[in-house]
Image (cartoon, rainbow, N blue to C red; front, side, top):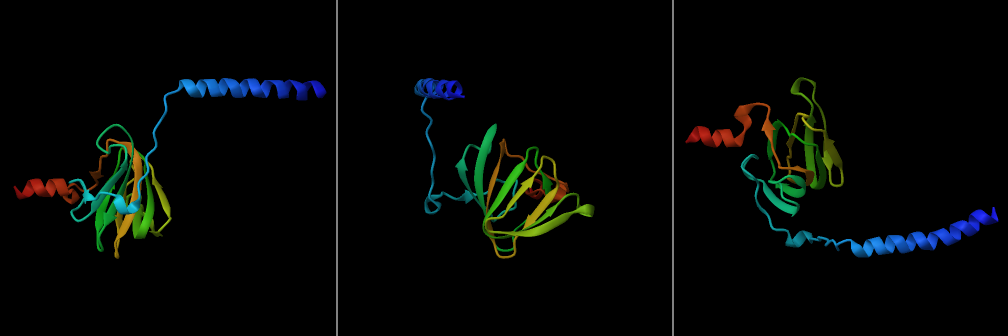
Length: 163
């Protein structure tokens, strides 16, 4: 038993030195931080109904890789039933959001408030709406895509039909 303890006591400093040496040879990674008051909000992309604002916190929703955005929805806002080609992780930051998840005929749902989290797996049909407005944080793998179950619900299609 003393040998194991002595062996471990000698091995630990060697492992720490090796880890420190490896850490020094790795490039330094920067961090990102953002205060809510300094977020820059712009119009949401054309694939979402008009009226919402979007702030990009990290990554690039238009490129491959992980991204994080916040979506600010005004009172009465609704995103019709749609899917995404990647998992979508949604955290409600402010307000309440009503989710309808699954195919319309068999949909289940619920009201989610500040601090609540929903994971929507790849391809899961869902719709969201808010009566009083909401801010949500969305994390997913890009590039961001939204595919409406009913093509008539797609705001991009409606804009093209008006031309």
